[in-house]
Image (cartoon, rainbow over all chains, first blue to last red; front, side, top):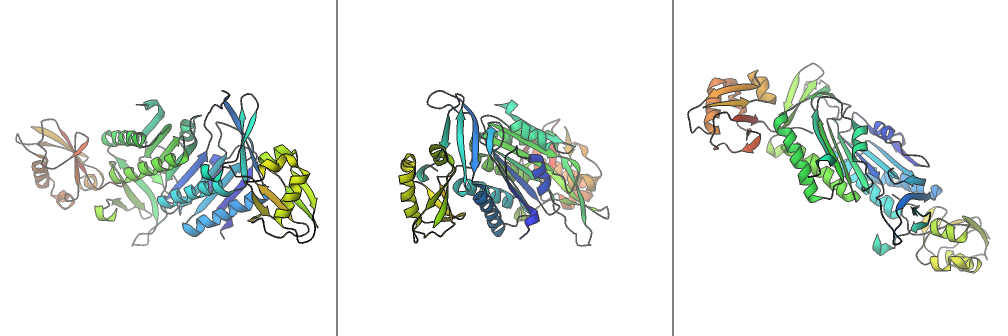
Length: 148
Length: 148
Length: 81
Length: 81
């Protein structure tokens, strides 16, 4: 199933953007879409600034889920190459927590597939984030279905 | 009009992807979408391979057109930072001819804005491409309205 | 039979544990395991209402029967990305 | 009056020129300029049917009147991106 054309991983380190773009580059591609998910600055009710995010995964489940998502994207669009990487552990606000790169023959396919993948990650994949505030306190984010 | 938050140019050199991603990075951004337009391999009716593209711009018109597009995107979506770069001259097939990077508070805005910008560039901006074949011959691409 | 329950995110923080073993009667379901867990870790009780269940790494319903050696993960609403 | 016509892409290749000056009677329109161009550069005649016009870097219609010093660009269907 074109496994060599998919790079899917969960990593405790900064996400390798340049390597991801090189990976999806191909003479069969007419467009590449890269999505980087970052986190905005924010204040909590106590007036503390958001300082970082801690991401936790259930990796034995989340990694197969990402692989299933990649296959679902391939079944809907003619993807040439794709990368799905999620970071775990402490992520500074300025650094991406998730990276998606899709190369496809026509640009609209890469836009549609990358958007599908990030929407599905946020809805279904066994990964959680905890907001870490400037006073050291933390808040797990567990969106209720109605707030998603 | 937030001009320091927009980087818009027409360049005769390889497009600076890493610098564009750094430019749009911001603590106010929740998502970054980067689009790279590349060209697929192809054969012409004579059996020659596509070897490269030559891009020509009417820069005194195309650059203001790109700036107008950037403002049009800002009027529709809350864009934090954006980059629109188009390359001119000879572009090898493996290298992007156009780069769009958009950072926005929420991811859907960056997807929508970057797609709007590339669609508008292809429809309206005074830039033309010539396909250069392996025998050295060239074909200007001038899509008729019905084929666009 | 013996199963392993895995805890993540707010559940792991509250329990102070990422994994717990449970001995259950034969023919127990996921719902039975959750009742046992409420007794063993009352601090989790308030946080077990909105979770999903993954049995051996696949989502499933609470009426699913368990087997010896199963890994049951409690999945609070996800927030990756 | 004197105007400058700028040529791009297939028109520039065919004409072997990127720019041409035209002297025109007062009150000439873009359409009049194009008629003059057909006479001066017959090799372009077949390629002037699907073009758009930019007068001083903005798109406009062929019935627009010209002024001395104008820059008229002939814009074949674009293919950037």
